[in-house]
Length: 94
Image 1 (tube, rainbow, N blue to C red):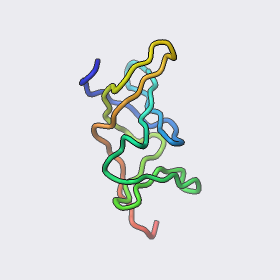
Image 2: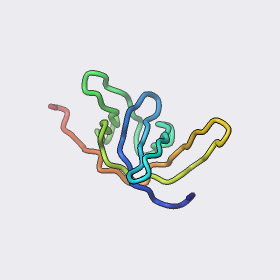
Image 3: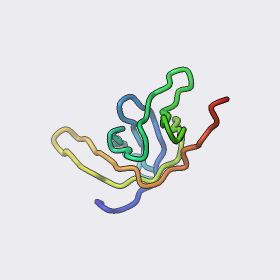
Image 4: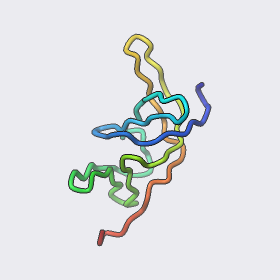
């Protein structure tokens, strides 16, 4: 499954965000440190992970494309890399 692009939705976030894959309903996480296009912070009032420079936002339910980065079978954990997103850019006024 490595190097395969998979469709999923953002489920929740903290210092990482969880993604549930479509069709097979498997959950994994994307570490914020792996988002290299910006520095992201969590804005609790907005329930969003927001890029400081790009203003790109990730919210629960956002559709994303991921690929498998690492699988730990003992811990039963999957790490994903974000490939593509439909995260929205919003103005500062919002």
